[in-house]
Image 1 (spheres, rainbow, N blue to C red):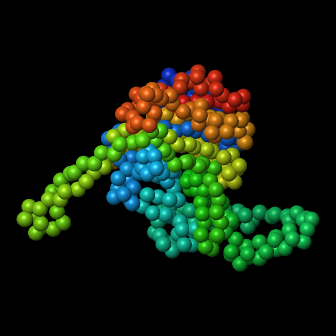
Image 2 (cartoon, helix red, strand yellow):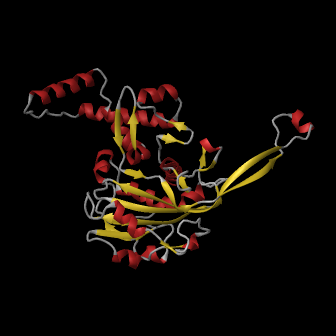
Length: 356
């Protein structure tokens, strides 16, 4: 990934003619600074002859809303893809790894559960160095105007002296783990602190009802040699979505970014991997999922100049088959996405748009 000094680049990997013209939509003086303005994105993912996400309660069949038969992709599943892809491409530490949670709330618990883990050892050194730096620094207490403030400060000081102040560990987790400062973290006992992450991703819902195709498959693999000698085979079932175009949203909240330290560089990593998620994390049961488009809105203020609902309406694709509004669609050709010029015409002042 290549970033110029003062420019926030969006598409170094996969630039198209449209994205090239809008790849530089914002000048950022310090790319390591926390994101200081609202960023919203409308995401579109297609699924064709594949199981985009299995429902455990339905025997692994594709998730579907029973009330309107539209397909569902959970936000947790999409965030899992972001974690995996960012970790593979940029080699950054993740708190919640695919093989389990590295930290269950605090440093001591992590070291007890994984004493030989290279990642936890690095984090231990990181935290201890930070604590040593803080201990050497001479901080003068500012005068407070009320007895309540004095009592809170005294209580905090007592906890710190007893080793019960976990603020450095929480802060270190935000600095060390990419997903902590991105999606937030709930720290359990004894930390007992929760922080909402700046990047929040919605559940995805298909724009039209989906058709689920059931297929029977024969499996010749056996559990033991006796079954093999008897030439047993197992009949299983596979469920796939014929076609569906799924819509979801991404919001980067600058107020939470200031708390966790989520930077423009962190955001750029996410924007760069989003089009690659489904190719890099592909499996045999999920070969027909593709990123179709992300319409990105960058606002000029922390509170934004367009609501998420208005951004969603503007980015929403046009139905190319209006004669059957409630029927399942067969391919992405049944939708028409708006051009960059059309999107710009519908923007409020103080908002810039890019297509990824």
